Amino acid sequence: MARAATTSDVFNAIAEPQRRQILVLLRAGERPVTELAQELGMTQPGASKHLRVLREVGLVRDRRAGKQRLYDLDARGLRPVHEWAGGFERFWNESFDRLDAYVQDLKQEQQEGDR
Amino acid sequence: MTATADREIVISRLISAPPEVVFEAFTEVRHLSRWWGPEGFSTTTRAFEFRVGGEWDFVMHGPDGTDYREWISWTEIIPPERIALRHGEFRDDPNAFESVVTFAPDGEATRIEMRTVFPTVELRDEAVEKYHAIEGGQQTLDNLAAYVSGIV
Image 1 (tube, rainbow over the protein chains, first blue to last red):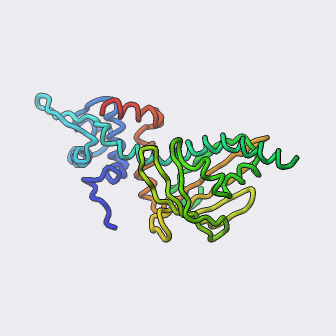
Image 2 (cartoon, chains in turn cyan, purple; image 1 turned 90 degrees about the vertical axis):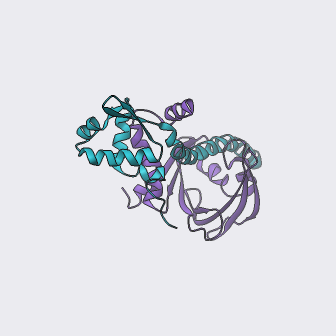
Image 3 (cartoon, rainbow over the protein chains, first blue to last red; image 1 turned 120 degrees about the vertical axis):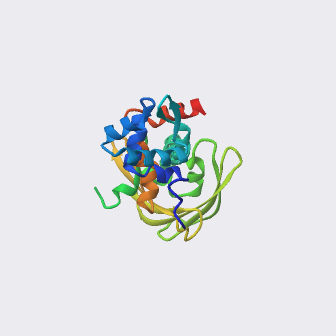
């Protein structure tokens, strides 16, 4: 199966460590590309390229503010990731809740069987 | 660290019964159908043979009416300590993944650990580990879930 394009697949987009760092920085609020580049020790064109990918998968929004362009986190884009990862853990945590309740019955059943 | 550590999800849980009882709950359909799946899910079994190489072919019914085809084959069974299985949607599913469930006594209870290995680093990485990295260890998954659903 062909791998989904980085620019259309949020899972691929966040597989890149520097793009994850950008998202972490943007959690604190909107920032211009110059600040992001400086903080991450990248060139400005490098940071811009990552921001473009993040914007295309819907993880980052931008707006013009005077001469600057400000970038902001759009956490809605993380929903598929959350559902995928959270879904797996939730499935098993809830199953094990039910298992914990069920083994109480089973324990009793076995004790009665032993009598 | 094992060679597969970067492709794993580990879920650990204390179950309040001894290992013999908890293990038993994994060995028969009449037990499994009582607890397998989240709250509100049920299962219909087509075939079940609990032995190494045996299969459990079943359908899981979600609370919203969605059916999920499921297929499990056991690769190792050591009562009451360890069960290894392959989990997919059908026999020879190329996306099937491996889980190892261990049962360790902990006082009167059992520490269950389920270690699941995904077929590729990418599947596990892109979805889970990187997601936690985004959280920066500051917020739990639930907090971010609340945040995401709050703004949608």
